[in-house]
Length: 279
Length: 136
Image (tube, rainbow over all chains, first blue to last red; front, side, top):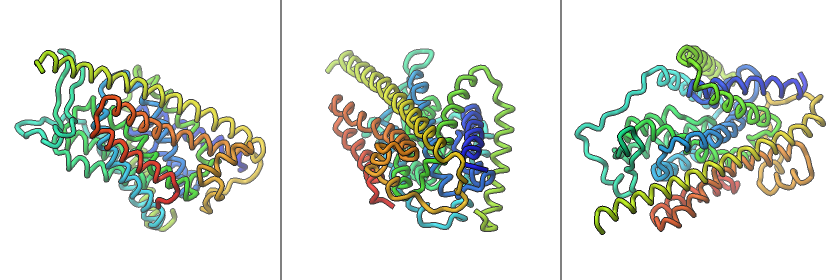
């Protein structure tokens, strides 16, 4: 196989990853690394570098669509980006210094967790009698979003817990080259009780900045190979764009189950290969 | 301040936020489009020259030093080397969210929101430190 054939095959696989990732909402990033390492025998460090680049692309590309809906909260986003970018630096640092088998093992576990959370119905957490966090008021994180009966105000809870979880999400993102949407959902929906409409759009906004924080480290350490990142970046973006266009009129439930199944299999294979020391 | 004035001020802030968001979304889209086409251009040169060679991604060797720093990548791109141009396009993509953060600093400064100017500058510092090559 020469470079040309290799590039075409990677491009085809990355297109599928971007398409399915955007249709199912799991994101293309989670399958790019297993695709490159398990199917094409690429070293996991190169694979993570390429995946990280594609994550920046899809997040920034999708932002335009999200902004139209007008639900994102730039103060929540910017405040939490302090946590995610610092976490991303730590993640990239860890990626440079721990054995690749350990990275593959953590990756496998993350795939299983992502599949598990995507199979769960996403429940809007009810604030109940809990007091809004005074820190949220001080940081002006509380806001409102347009609802059917005028602006719907919301408050933000448990700011320190959310901040800590976002640091963890950033670390995973930097270590594995993914958007780590599953952990962000945990932090923003469950801990901080931010309404879905706000948390989904705000988290998408944050993914690109978080990935950029670790991409700098990866670039300067020679983990980003232009020949490999090129077909991945070009086609994941096109795939994600096509996916968002057909999303409105597609029945995605079945596809979602199938894709979750694939993610589980990939996770098991990553863990198996990590334990055998083959990645 | 009466409550009517307070509500008007809040509405004005929401409107400003909204305006900023739309401008940011446009900035992001331009960044991603530009990066995509630069990478495509580099890809054509790279595949034309190296399409028939053998790929070597199973073994990790790291990139040559000139593809690992902002200055080196710019130099390689100016010499019209395929891999250099691709890497330059990837740098543009990395720079897109960073530009968004710079833009946010300015927007918060215009709103005279000192707290968020500081918080946003912290994020910007982390991003620039990462790209400086001293991190890791």
